[in-house]
Length: 327
Ligand code: ADP
Ligand code: MG
Image (cartoon, rainbow, N blue to C red; front, side):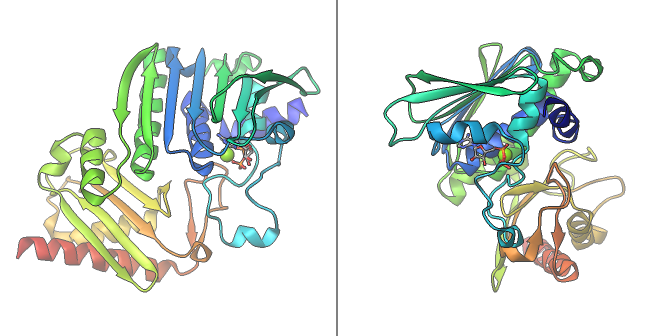
């Protein structure tokens, strides 16, 4: 199983930031509202994610580390409407095949916590009791220690940490109800409190993307039937960069989608000076059955059951918000 897992790991674990992404998604799926991330040496030495979510019972720990074991999908029918960020049951198995992974957890109702490590070629799981607060701690040490070919592709500590920061930013934007602390080499780098309303949400975006994003931001919130679009658009000259500052979340998941990006650009059309890109943080919510997230292992891509309609909705809503603003 080790080799099979290492091959699968290639798809989800490209660098430390991909580990951070998977662990944060798990914490959010476990309904945590407080997450602490500790990084050492750009994540090559240590990635530790501590959450206050539902936890994993002693009996389920071994399963959590097994490949293709997920507690999130019970029937193949469930794949038609996915409400969680994870669903493939691959991340922990993949990560533990290319790093030293320790999974420790205590569900609220369980008195004692337990930790699990998978070791050796057969990935035998060893369980140990441990006193813990309710929630889960995942520790990933020495990433790629047993896959030198991948280790070679790791960049400088600082570069890897920049990727981690970008990942944390994206997830912090996508899950505004979660308080997040990020530390690097024991120093607090970012601390964002949970947002419980639009105003706090907007402040939070400012603290993540910089206050200038908010100064002239246009707020948007509109719905047609069960499809809702809300968020903030920045003035067109806010940002000269081409790829930073464009965030779209579909049902809480960060996506990179050509259709949606096109819809937004189209809405801006002649308001956009040459070479300029709008910056935005937009949340699109639609029925889970209307969107297929099972397109790629990293889950950055989605497919809409009615792409044209989503495109036009998005474009119209953004355009209306821009028009209202210029009146
Ligand atoms: P997936 O997220 O696709 O289900 P993972 O390999 O990421 O697969 O995780 C495997 C399982 O371990 C999850 O289905 C979940 O039951 C459990 N798990 C992982 N991380 C956590 C966490 N932070 N809190 C609670 N349960 C977790
Ligand atoms: Mg997962």
